[in-house]
Length: 328
Length: 281
Image (cartoon, rainbow over all chains, first blue to last red; front, side):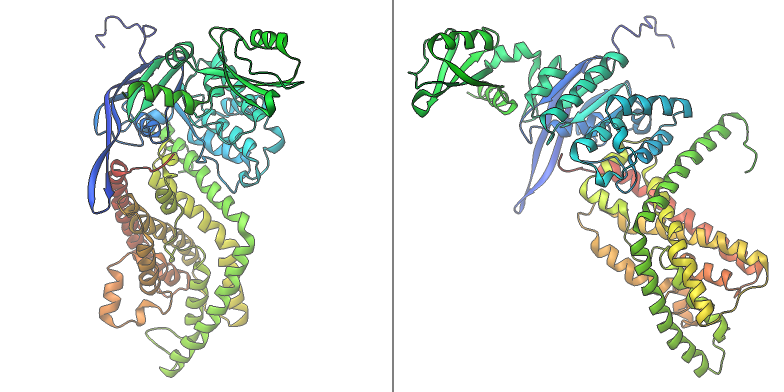
């Protein structure tokens, strides 16, 4: 009430944790020991950010998300999400947050997709007008019109994930948390989903927090990356910074018309391997230092290129290097 | 009830009714996807109903045509109404939310602005109400046509009976939630509890024989549990075994059990939520 600044735009963070810690007691044979899943995590995320939260399996990603959304009680430290205390204010927070768990469904398995949306609209107390407008928007943007009347159990994985995302976003939450949203999807389906999320963020200013094993998700969706290692924050910054830190390289794979000696002299590249007596060669290059096109041009000076692919660095690789750099 | 009360509290009530009404309908419609299973259940109900007819009619006749107030016609009504309620009153101890707690899907439930216990019970009641259509009503019709039964003359009995059936269904869902689902916040495995519930509930709810022909001590014991509220009391009211004032007493007992069981379930849910460790992704 007496808040003098009263300045909302001056960053009330959408997520703020201080020393957030969660321990689990696990049984190990006859003994019980304590495992620290999240260790002294202090992080602040502003409204409108798109944050990729990455780390190896068991690094503490899901545990963090559960604490941010009020499913799990922290052992120590504090957390506020959308200005609320997640555990105590669970129901109020649920109106402002949408969560997609790639592995868990929030749809009614036996009912048509449309019916799940209607139930969720009632749960979130949307007016009839808001319900129609938002449902129409999501159906159109996520191209769901063809399967709206089908029971959820009959959907393909790609269709189901689109419906899951729509279900989580139906109440236009300020914060959307996506836990492995593109897992198992084919390239086209991933692309569609990413495009949708980009558009959603642009039109509604939604804050995104996503965990993923897919570098494509991070590159196309996120402007900030958090890497977690054994419960501790190992990196917090943007993608180019991450690449600089770990030197994440891309790999150009070229199929050549004739056996060629190892292409070792191309500027800003490193020759990794040759197969078939030099018919197929793999060259690593740093995306900061050069481009795939330049490398290709340089290769073409040496041999005729029949085919090519560019391999992205995968998340596991990036994470492994970050971890390695932290462990002497 | 009819006129929407004005003011913020009235608005809140309407909002809650809309939400849980929609969840009730969802449970009802989900169950409608399993008509074949419902038909199978009806066949089984009918077979066991005929078995009960053979045994209990013989018992009544052996007792000289009347046993603890039951003649053959009243016993027939008891048998077919109780068989009909078997698809709706939860005497098996299985409940969706128990599986969701076990495999961690309950996380999704906690991410909704809902009371998890109330939503779970409402869903179960919705499913149970659907089952009255393919299992409850046909069971009573088959029994009435094949064997014949006594029916109350007083229209109030039907009205109170319908209310009592709804309460019985709700008490059973709330009790299963309390004794089978909620302990899952602490226990890894609740199948033992489910089995125990199944064995005890059918017996004390009066599924096999009316609790009124139990020995006195056992009848008293049964009435100290919520189980007769699930099936015996609604059957008593629908069959006209009790008059209107007796029916009101039974309905009051049902309401009291519902409040008690639901309140305990609420306490366990609140404590359990803080204990919950959702495993895996």
